Image (cartoon, helix red, strand yellow):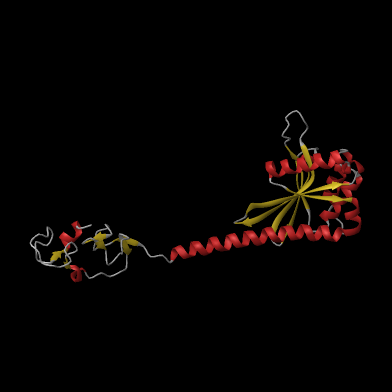
Amino acid sequence: MKKIPGRCTEAVINLKKTKRASFEEVYFLVRIMTIFDYISLVEEKGNTTNDIRFKTFYKGHAVYIRPHYKVENINPKSQDWSIDFVLTIHRIINNKEIFIDSLGIEYDGHPSHFTPDRLLSDRKRDIQILIKEHVNLLRITKDIVTESFIEIEKAIFSFFDRKISIIDEVQSKTLSYINSLEDIPTLTTCQLCNGIGRLNFQDCPICHNMGSTPENQKIDLSEFEIFTCGKCGGITSNDCEFCAGEGKVTREIALSMT
């Protein structure tokens, strides 16, 4: 098992001294810490375990390990809940750490964890923790640590890999969308229909009822000076109020025919 730095070792020993963690829990935490290539103690404001936080990296992402992570109990008369430790993963963007997700790990080593009442209460607690803190919980037993620790390591890294792939996809699609906006031409009010979208009782032949056209689109308005009357269809009749029997209307009149 790889060694961890001295200050980290002292902080872990402090967990044992506070009697908030059994030897097995502390040993399990140490084993989890050693699956990473680098670990450091980044925060220790006081003597309580709430102030201890370890930092490492995984595939360019910051990872924090927080022992005895406190969660407010839904029952105000009861003690706050405590997760043995929580790993949080963050993406670094412009030197800022953006939180992605968290994985809580509970070490169930004592036989009392497996009584029917305790199993039920723990599951109810896990649900409330997920609701309140959005922490995904992984419960580990002594046998799993002894016989299949490599699977625990795989599970943690698989969790990180999945979260990284999701954020990669979101970031990629977001950037792709932003880049696509740069290709959209600037729009301006349609010169033919003056933004109305219709004339001569028909959709505008230039903007097709959109009311706007690309700013760089060239339009020869001389081609749209006269229209076949959209009211009578060009059938000469003295009864047509728009073309007065001529079967044709000017653009100005056509603009009033929407």
